Length: 184
Image (cartoon, rainbow, N blue to C red; front, side, top):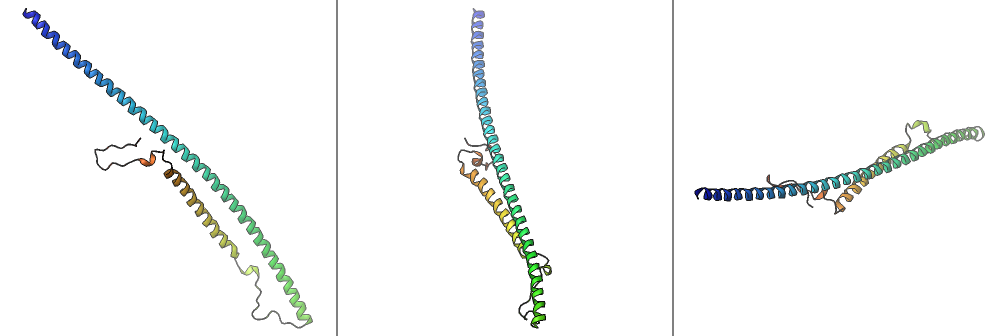
């Protein structure tokens, strides 16, 4: 009889051990499912961040191409202006030669003694630099700065106006126990 009671108590102990083991297995399964869900969630966030990064890289490449096109257009416009400036300098030189010939003819014919005191004729060779070149250099720099400001404004306005992106909702924890994470 004692043996039967001992066996019954042993069976009860074993049944309790089995139920505890089943409970632990179910907890482990729950934790496993929970960690798999977290992994999937983080993978989705990682994919969305990669897509956002690729979109920004595409936008930046397009803006860079546009900026290069504008730079090329400005350089060609500057080249045209320089050509016109050299043409004007040549024309000015020819006009000065004609004026000097006419003034020499006037001296021979009428005895004119040259230009009056207030009217001085200057040769284009006396100036080392065209008065327009400094203006165009400053204008070129100003346009480049405006383009850079526009590109930065466009990128930041795109980033801050898009509500679906979670990148900007990233919060920095204020205490050490709070974890880093992106809101969903």
